[in-house]
Length: 256
Length: 245
Image (cartoon, rainbow over the protein chains, first blue to last red):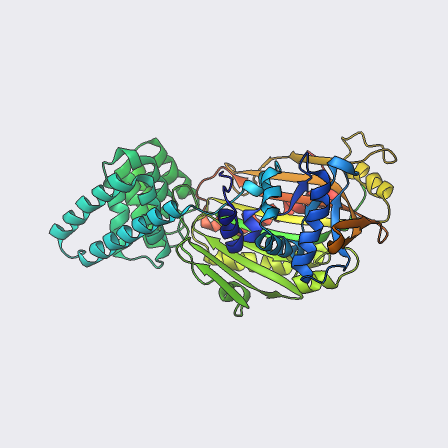
């Protein structure tokens, strides 16, 4: 969990996802040393955000049952108040100063990724998409598939688990699945990249629980290629629920 | 144990992808609600999509990110602003079902998930602080509450149980119990001041539940509906029986 460092960081995340970025519902308690300012400023900002600059309309707040003085706090828990809270935070940057001084875990939850992270994610997604397209185009030609395998190894070396996660989206989202997804599962099962072994196995285990029977079949085969106790455990767990005869047979074959 | 008729402050259902897996983001509202959303907010670069629209008299938000999916049932700003008394979405007994219908429609089309959670935030109005603590004394029998001389109660505890649907899964039953006081605060910004006591204070019990599965591992799709029912049943029991191990 990373605390937002600047107003811009926090504003970005809350604008995109107000409910999660500040972890509602949460309780704000008055920061020590700024008692009067906080008690007065908090409802004022909320009220202004809700009603504009009309100024003197009464505003209803839930207050925590903690008496008064430095222990005074507010519960931000209604949908309405959440929206107003975000509006207030956007309009009054000093509001954030109070929040950052408040030892509230809620403020720290779910902040948006940094620009560097977004840039890297976009690069990984772009490369994953290119790899996917190459594999799709190469399905009927063994030589080209070997080339895609080499590309996948480079991709995994370069991006590690982040790369596996990016591929997982392509594999699991394209339902009903096709030969490209099955090929990727097989390649993930056979890859020798040690740094991504756990992540690759986890993606195969997730595919084994897909609603798509063909994807489960391919995942069972790939987990067999992957080997090891954890892969076998995933296969055994699936066998309890599996109704599709072909998939069952494949799992049993891989376990035998 | 006293029977408390809980009202809804907020309902949330959440799902998380299994480890090392990312969710794909796509339009969902229409598929699970049956009509187009009123508003769509999308940030493709960040991998975020919010679909928002009316749900009965209130609001439903479907939020998708690469690592989390939420359906949130809350109050529209307009309705909340118009209410004078206790702000709630109405009785849990009545309003949970349409929400769960939407959740179940999503579960039918859901990708592989690693964890699901049902998190109702509930509220129950009482006349006085003492009445509230009398009720808390009954629904939190393990606590030494003196109803006349107790304040500032906040009781948070997880009472995990083994799932009956999936033996290897634990159902975490996290509950936060507290007492709230609502009072009108009159603010006069140009004078930089705030005055309380503009109206009579009202009181409410608050119960925030977070019922979620553990460990974080792929959940068989065939078990999702039953597992969700188990989460709802666990929430019902906490609401009805109070804090019982």
